[in-house]
Amino acid sequence: MVERLLISLLTGGHVLLEGVPGLAKTLTVRTLAETVRTSFSRIQFTPDLLPADVIGTQVYDQSNGQFTVKRGPIFANIVLADEINRAPAKVQAALLEAMQEKQVTIGGVTHVLEEPFLVLATQNPIEQEGTYPLPEAQVDRFMMKLKVGYPSKEEEREILRRMAGGTAIPVDAVASPGQILEARAKIAELYMDDRIVEYIVEIVHTTRRPADAGLKELGPLVEYGASPRATIALAQASRAHAYLRGRTFVTPDDIKAIAPDVLRHRILTTFEAEAESVTSDTIVQRVLAAIESP
Image 1 (cartoon, rainbow, N blue to C red):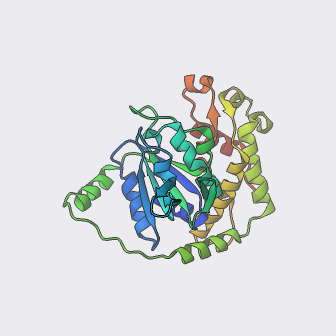
Image 2 (image 1 turned 120 degrees about the vertical axis):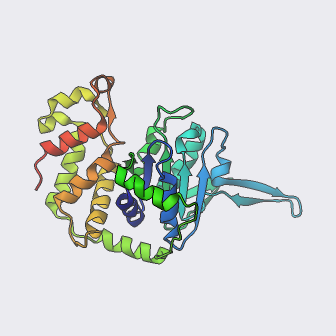
Image 3 (image 1 turned 90 degrees about the vertical axis):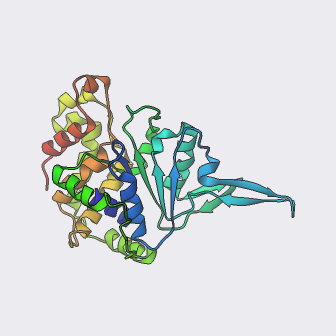
């Protein structure tokens, strides 16, 4: 999870973390933000939240008879959208422009968000009480969806040793926004062979038309495959994956490692798949196994 969050920071791709309460999703995001000398805001999503509470609104100033813009918490470099699926659809829609276009519109005036801009969202599983499923258009705007599970016994012992004392653990800021943007430029220049490009395209295409790769049995299980945005995200994330390992080129292993996190939320399964307990993760693994790597 930590490595995937670093990949998102180094590529500018938003991340959705899903897991039951108490797994330190919020703490992880807040700690990551504290390691960068930049602005950070946290939005607690609730059923009564309004779009203006996220992006801001116009306020009338009686002293001069004019409207001024009061900026919302979205105007930060790193935004934590905590329990994002507890707010209704109109609030989810308020994030769409900011996440994709890196800008917001208030009172007909467009405001460009300062780079780096990153939305790190957490959510409880959809089956939990009082949640709203995220619109597909918004889910697709997240570069990766990470599933956070329970820690092992050894990890939980370490959690107990660190956190049971009640004292805050100091976090040092070790990077600046300029360094992050400089690293992004280097990552964008990493070499990607034409065979790797073809491999990425083949993977994404197979999620839409499994029969073309000899996976006819997956046809009735897939409602919609991954979008072209997934192709771009897979290339960017695999470059960052290689960069974190000190390489200047992308290998098929980078693609295989990052593909489940990039594709799992972009594949819509059918009722037949649900009846057979086949998840999007299962489909991704079968697609990767069926396509020969270069």
